[in-house]
Length: 452
Ligand code: SF4
Image (cartoon, rainbow, N blue to C red):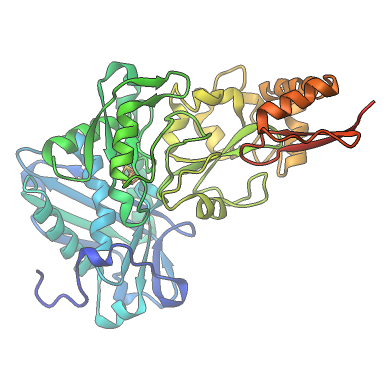
C-alpha cells in the first residue's frame, strides 16, 4: 500500500461511475484530447516509480473544467518484449479504475477520465494516481522491474504526445495485417471488460482485433505467455461450423464458459443472429439499417448523427454493456481493414454508410468498385436521403431491393407459402394476404394486397 494515500485503492472501485453532478474535473474524452501509451524501454531509460506531470495537476484545476490528458508509461525488465505493450497498455484502464474517485473509460486515443468531488476534497492528485498505477503494475506483473509514468495536461504537449502515440498504434496494427485466421490454430479470448460489461467476451483473431483496438492476436499471444492466469486465454479454434459467417466450435465453447453461459454461439464475421458481444470500449459500432438492407458503421469520435437520427453515444448505450444483439456489433476501427470485414453478410458490398472521417481513413481499404457508393454524412443525413443516394449510385444492396419486389409480385398463393415458411403464421384470409418479411427479428415490411 502507498503511505498517506488520500482515497483508497482496490478492485471494488473498478465499476465506479462518476456522473456529471459528482464530477470535479474531466480529462480527455469527446470534448478534449486524450491518449495513453505504454512502451517497453531499455532499463537505463526508465527512472523507477518516477511520476512526471507536464502541465497542471488535478488539484490546480478549476471545478467543472475539461482538460486534455496524455498518459505515457515506460516499463523495463529483461523478459519484456514489444508484443506485450498493447496488453499492458490496456491494464491502465483497470489500474486507474482501482483508485477510488478516479474513473477511466476506453483506450488508446479515446480515453475519457473523471475525478469526483470527494476525491478532490481528499487531496487526490495525478501524482497519487501515478503512484497507484505504478504499484499495481509492479504487483501484478513480476516481469516489470522498472516503471516511469508521465501525465500530460498542457494542451500543446498533449497534442504532441497524441501524434507520437498514434504512430505507435499504426505500427502495431500494421504488424498483424499479413496474418489471417487460416494461418493459426489458436485465437485469444479476453474478459478484461467484465468489470463494466459482465457478459462480454472478446475473441481476438488475426482478422478480428479486439473491440477496443488495443490487443492484437500477437499481443494476446504474448500476454498468455507472461500471465497464464490472467484475463486473456488461448482459444483452440476447433471445428469451423459455419464457413460463411465464421463460427468456430472452440470460440463458442470459450464464450459460453467465460460469459457464465450467457453467450453460447458467436459468428465472428456477421452482425446478425449471434454477433460478437459489445462491451462499451469499442472504437466503433456496426449497425443494421433495415430500411435499405445495409450495414452502417459509426465511430466514437463522430459528433453528428447516423441516418437513424441518433449519435454514436445513444447507439452505444443501447447496444453495449456486453450484450449480444442481432444487428449490432462493437468493433475496432482496424476491423474495417480486415479482409473478413462482415464477410458473412456481404462485407463492403453490404456497407452503406460510414462517417466521412472513417471513409477518408480507410478509403484505400474499401474495394474500389464500391467505395464511392458508400454514403457519408455529407451524402445522406436521414434514411430517405440514404435510399436516394444508394439508388443513384447503384449500390449492390439496391439489387436486393429489386429481388424483394420480384418476390412481392409472385401470385398470392405462392406469396402466402413464402410467408408461412418464414413466420409459420397463417395470415392469409378475408380477401387479403399479409406478408411478413424478416419477421424473425421484427416486421421489416407489411404488405396488404387485395386478392383477385
Ligand atoms: S474490449 Fe475486449 S480485448 Fe479490449 S480489454 Fe475489453 S475484453 Fe479485452
